[in-house]
Length: 523
Image 1: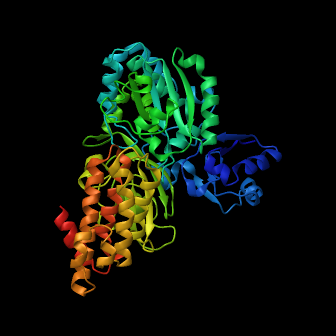
Image 2 (image 1 turned 45 degrees about the vertical axis):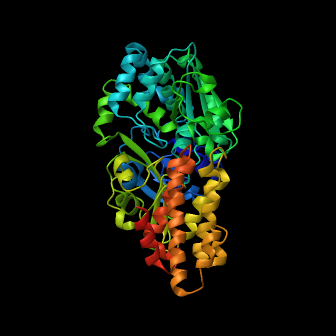
Image 3 (image 1 turned 90 degrees about the horizontal axis):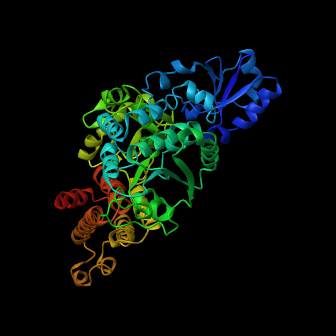
């Protein structure tokens, strides 16, 4: 009798995977609960002898067993969504049982840690640097440089902190690692400990991830003797978005309010409890075991383009036909990801915009879909890769409303420490409201500039001028937030606002000419 594989990923379970597994077991079949392949639109996905059926329901059980099911997708490994991926971080996805030490070791687990202990700290840091691995959570800072700084710092105790506070829209790769391949993350942290001389690690994640919390705690118990003398604990936050910023995370980890710290000093020198601390994202740390295998650093560096080395687990979400995780080398175009791999919109309507990098990423117009997935290429286009979450919108989306949401989101999630973020986000909402409501008369502007009010009259000419001035004010505010905020929450909020204004001015005002003039003057 064949072994039936069904994912125990949170998304699969939400779709009924537990009941489905129980139904197959009731019929006498052996069921293995594995990690997810990442084809989210097909979950719960049932695998029998390499062939898949999904999305499966209880009504499909008999048809799946007798081979008559219309949910058959063929050999999973040959599926168009899977076969062209370049899976390094997610090499085990869909294939192994998350908490099985036997499965992990049989697929190369602990090889990187064993070699790391043989070659020593300096060589570990050198190979991580050679790989070109950069932070996978935001700014893309070179991991090797961060580790080298902590290695060179003098302290009796150093720490490894995993930033698993995955809070961006369209992101679920961290969750998939923690739920589906927890030993890879733990091994990466243990290697980081070997590299910099740290014996204590912490995984900080949000309470909204109960499955990941359970899996990680169980995995840490099972592999404690393997990673010793390195020790690791799971710490759970309350879900504040700002705690995804490393210094705010460290404050929360210390039991303080999640509030951004001024830098310097850098966490690499004065981090957790004032000691040298490596703070890396889940995807960065989970890539490390592969890099530390013999020849792994060179292989990793051979993928990608320019300074963007290796692979990126891209997460496709929003209004998209084939949502899921797609790991591929840097350099693939955004258009290929959205239209060819993702299949376009789920609604069947034209794509209007794509937001990359979470709720504070720029909105990218289809005219820009030739942009390669590369840190520098995105930066040149005033956009962000961030955690590589891709949210797709069809032509019914109101981009003016989406721009306002960015300001509202910032206002709600701000830690309140710096003025540009705390106050600027509130003023930004008000300005966008006035532009969209057409409130450009002297009465509306008196709140901003009393001395200007007498000059403002309800004539067509002055109303147009007022719209232009409002947009100029918004552009100036965005500039202040971008360069004056303490952290990326306030600093990145302008990206969705200015990109929406630039590409979809008609969603803000009928006077699109005024928008063009104001944006040109703000350059």
